[in-house]
Image (cartoon, rainbow, N blue to C red; front, side, top):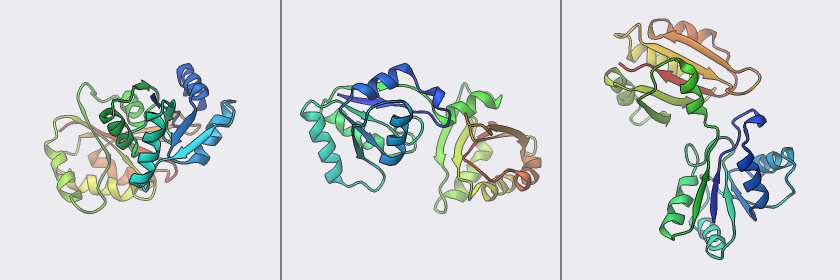
Length: 223
């Protein structure tokens, strides 16, 4: 059995009872960073158990090793460092192979940063497109220009190191739509959680005064 377990994105209180129970009863936790997940288990009062790292640099051998444990009937829980596995981590590769091998899979839903940002944005979210992190170089300019025609709400992640540059590029690419609304969500579910509502016309000024700390989710109104 492979249990896909969502974990808090900041506030430990967001862990679900079902997630705690699953992490207690599984034999192994497959995670991005064993230190992060080990600390989470400690905070939840869960006794130490086997932790297997599985991240963007894991090779086919590691994937085969984990699949072997599942085929033997072991109960494994898949987690990410924060949030829902498979969204911005390589967990999908394990889930896909497990499906191919007809291994039983269950999902324990929970927190997700981009869904949290959408819910608090005040923008229409009956239709949206999630983009993860924008490409750093190849295809970036074309993607930014495509936002001029995007008829759905757009949501994506950005790092603290690139947030000001990205906001300035958005302001330049979408200058012909000055009143298009933008919501910047920062440090979601944490002590310094912040939602900043602005528009394209004022985006450059917002970028300059923005607190450059934490993790960011950008929600942009449809064209």
